[in-house]
Image 1 (cartoon, rainbow, N blue to C red):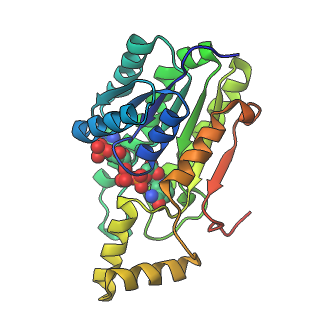
Image 2 (image 1 turned 90 degrees about the vertical axis):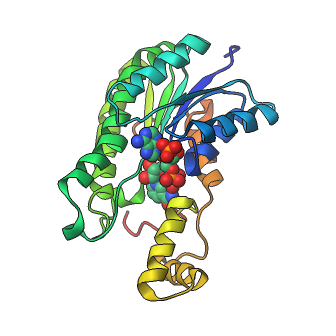
Length: 259
Ligand SMILES: NC(=O)c1ccc[n+]([C@@H]2O[C@H](COP(=O)([O-])OP(=O)(O)OC[C@H]3O[C@@H](n4cnc5c(N)ncnc54)[C@H](OP(=O)(O)O)[C@@H]3O)[C@@H](O)[C@H]2O)c1
């Protein structure tokens, strides 16, 4: 039975899905180490967590494309709390659009954060996770297994991250660390709002018309909520999921057409 307060690192916690994940872990009694670039947003999340009665939150602001940043985040977590139980690699920002309009730098940047940032975080966190018999959840995206023309960066980044996570789970089964991935479908965050705004401009529609048209095209009655992703992530990190390792969980309202 675990008696110490567990500790989780959540990247991309300043807004959207990552913020909801941190809030969920805070409610569940974790110390949350919250990482992203926007220190003010992270501070406001730490205040929210404190107000909600969660254990201590630690803000570690910085750019996770910087090769040294994941190690800094892990060191800060260990210095503050002396242990680490879970890591959720959620930070991601890949450009979408016409392939012919995307440059090498866009591809390099997409991989720098969501793939290399997560890989470095897994490496930095591995030893303390091995000690706590902890777990990693890498937030990926349904573009990993349903390639679409306008997502030529995010799709490959996501596929690569699933492949890497599965390989790490293979190592983890011998070392007591579980590694899983979760693919959100279409989730209502700022990222989705921006996509709807672009679609509205392109099609000459109002925001509401564009939202309805996009959803109809995607065959959805509604978009997912960040909280619905957060609850699934926390389940993957819980004792109830103790034999789930090397698995991908789609939380997409059924949007993925394949099997
Ligand atoms: N929303 C969806 O429908 C959807 C669908 C599939 C997959 N996903 C995946 O889910 C994850 C979260 O998506 P979201 O919609 O919540 O995105 P979002 O609202 O754009 O938030 C992205 C988060 O990543 C952080 N971030 C961006 N660049 C960073 C950098 N260089 N260094 C450190 N942190 C950085 C951002 O914080 P700062 O700007 O403060 O750094 C923010 O906290 C992403 O990996 C995304 O690919 C989302």
